[in-house]
Image 1 (tube, rainbow, N blue to C red):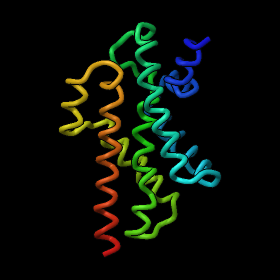
Image 2 (image 1 turned 180 degrees about the vertical axis):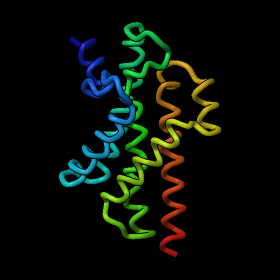
Image 3 (image 1 turned 30 degrees about the vertical axis):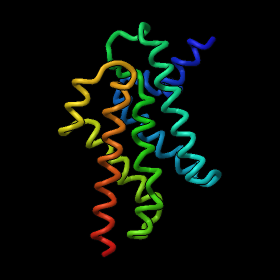
Length: 161
């Protein structure tokens, strides 16, 4: 039972099983889910939920590693969910620098996150190649989310200044 739940969780409810661009589909789904949940919950609650997802992901990956065929399987997309949430959770910071509708920030977060996640510039590429296990699967996407956040903050600062 727990094994099936872990697989469902790690594939973000089977989005990871999509044959074409599962990571991109998980990022789009995360943005859409974020826009829905932000109307119900505060940023703080979503931050706590993201932390919970991150820590459970580490557990679930370690418990389910033997099921997948590679050390960083494309079916596991929960790392994209956590990585995508990082710049989305920083929207209040962006809005203090330059006020845009949340939807514009979501689109920008999505595009920049996918850019960093797919191209993996240094040091993301270094971490991706030299990290193993559950943390290795998660860390490159977390860095892509952090890079995205910093770039949007920088852009918003100069746009608003």
